[in-house]
Image (spheres, rainbow, N blue to C red):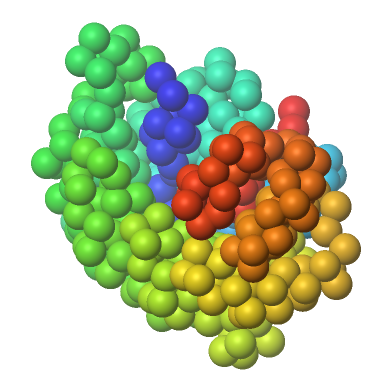
Length: 381
């Protein structure tokens, strides 16, 4: 079972059950999370906990805020990791003990908390823990749906599980079903995810899962995937991750102009974005713009973006890709010797691309975009 697949299977349901009055409060603040307004979302989660100290919603939302920080902030903090685990454990404990909760809500919160714990365990390479948490998540989600089948939000988790289990090789399905506790069903999974998109709480996450599915080789619906990503950006304009994702997706199809429009680097949306998110996200947005301009043949614009990246003093793995693209730019400007010097000194993941350009100059070489490195898809143990 691939890591990406298990990550999808571990996707927990999002928030409170329909019969729970806290659901209205959850719906009112959910946009801050998907807009990656992490300072505001954390304050909202803390306020929710103050209003409902025995309800699992407070620690659950605080846990989600911490989870998002692990994915998008500049560095991974051990204290953030521990705090995430603590909040999700508190959520599970409160959901099991709060006698005022509707049974469906109690099951739903436990399923959600176990689902997010499974995601993090998988990203850390802790396979045994990931499978165990995913199994518990499935058990609680299924129970929640049985108790309240009219609740749209629960179909985010069910649809994710049903679809991705159906995408496994046939020989692996019985073993995976035994581990995770649910059988694959492609049509059922897609229908459940489409249903979840109608929810004001789980709708954005369901749309993101469907965008990934429709853009896959198996489904082959690129226009449908792009429409979902465009909707997510319109709904959550300050989410830099959605913008990078859509731009990368369009760029891989050679649609340079709409990809650059999705980034909208000079559109002003960054002014309202979370400062902690932009410290890590802005370099990737600018890099994507430079790369797309380069591929589109707009060398002057690409040079300006690369110069802006230089001013940021980037030291992580993105620096090697910037170095590679500087070589591409020199090639495009007819300075082959200078370009070769860049290619020979490119390191890291970008080195494989650089070797191809040693044989065939840009732009007649392998014009591929950088694999997405942000948000994170791996975490330290």
